[in-house]
Image 1 (cartoon, rainbow, N blue to C red):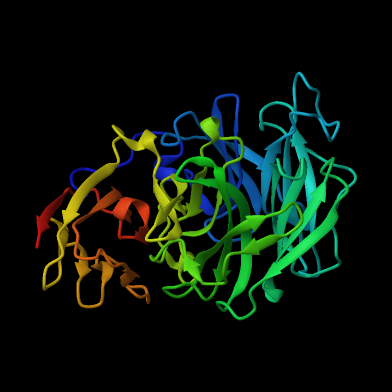
Image 2: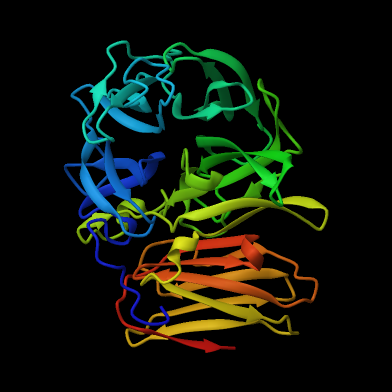
Length: 434
């Protein structure tokens, strides 16, 4: 959009693997000047199955090099979602202080669906080859659904802290460990009166409000499916405090990370430089992920986003914006100013293939919207996605990041995000304001 927006040539074209099925990002970690992206991957086909951890690396978050499968499924178990850390203090004994191990913490899923537990694997060659820990599982409650461990070194606890979900109970469980092997339950967080759908892929992390390190708040991401704000899968979050034992939300208001159809299961990178909090999500929706044509890959990731908190209108507000590394890349990147009028106003994208996308602001409903109905497959789905936003009659900016088969909108400094897949097109788009 806004020109030929084909992704720059790389082995991980446009944030998707060269072939086969991909879903949740896993094990996002920065180590030795490289960002590591592990992800749910089917090495044998372009539909969900044979869940393993694929692997790609990048030095700039934009161009990715796909690597061999990191952790493969077995005859009895799939390698479901989880996280990765670098064990710099060698708490596990898997590496050394001079050569710390990269440790993956993942959900071991029995193929018969009878059990999900948390297990470890480790690598001492920067994630190329992996050894399965012989003491697995390290956390097993004997449950059929208990998954998606997100582990970080928590400076409040001075220990490893795991966020992991009991999906059908709408609970995030917090565990603590000194060595990643023995885990102690700290507390559970729930919002049973909130959104429908099973809870998945939690992530708990601190951010400074307006960059002031004296004002730290904690953010808890929880993905839900179904029950997303536009239907199908989506991600909501809570803002609150962490006291080393429990997460205490400021309130239980349902806040949506993204008002589009295609941003799910996202989590943040561990150990990103300069204390940046960088997020990556799966750009798809479980409502129709299996129906999106594969060519020959099926599945992609969102553009990496930097997260921050700011006090706006007396409320602590989560902001998300494309990472700075996108500047100067070959990906479409355009910013427009919207001045509220009595009628709708915005921009339209159209191309020679007859595809049309409209982005605008509706002053009557006070909503920013993205209408992809003119560039969508013959797949049943909502195509007009709306985010509530009141600019208080002031002008504001909308930034649009576009690729061959996707569009990601960021409004008002990152207060609003809308992410949608489109029919892929290499034809140049013409931009027309209205």
